[in-house]
Length: 238
Ligand code: ATP
Image 1 (cartoon, rainbow, N blue to C red):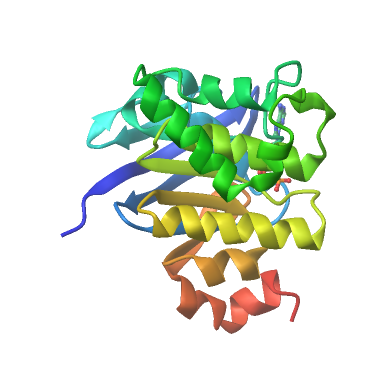
Image 2 (cartoon, rainbow, N blue to C red; image 1 turned 45 degrees about the horizontal axis):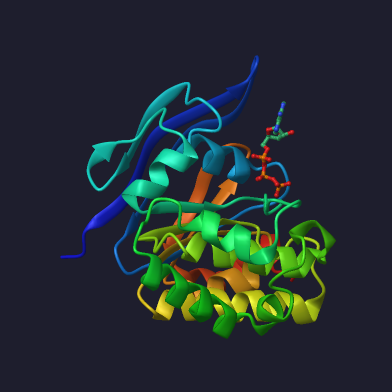
């Protein structure tokens, strides 16, 4: 049986008196691509932030590889193999592309392998190679998203969490990002993808979860969900 890598149970998160996540359960097994979809303000980003310790969990459990990771920070979790590509990308704008990629490998000290992995990332994103010595802050949103993904891959993640990687990007750039998500997954990285583009997210995924008003309202096989009239009406514009 596949191993459970990430398990969230009874998670509640609040901003002051306002509960944004009201008791959420979900899990990600090794070798899965899981998509978490739902409309604006559903609580998806808040959930991701609680997993990576950016926000405190009010209640509930967050386990990675069977151990509680509650309260541990994003940088610390990279060591365990849980790596986040945050919403808004969070690249270091005053550093070059190459420096950003090197930072992604900060937990490693295998210099030759790091250099090889940088070349691998450049192979996935030739645009980053062309701009290797350029400051990250001078790149377009799509290019910064590629860099954020490349930087995450430099840590050789077991699980990659991606929070709305296509937000604000052109259709062509969205296609490229989805293609890379699939590629990364096919290379053996388990993926939890948070997306507003429900159709694309479910096409890529093995399993899906729908989040609404701070709760998981639906879950199951992604292809079944994709054909579910309720999902189609609510999220696929039909
Ligand atoms: P989106 O797709 O728009 O990013 P989301 O599903 O990721 O939506 P969240 O960003 O997690 O949703 O927001 C969940 C709820 O928490 C929303 O009602 C939002 O207004 C509220 N919220 C988010 N951040 C804060 C904050 N810093 N302070 C107060 N309320 C917040």
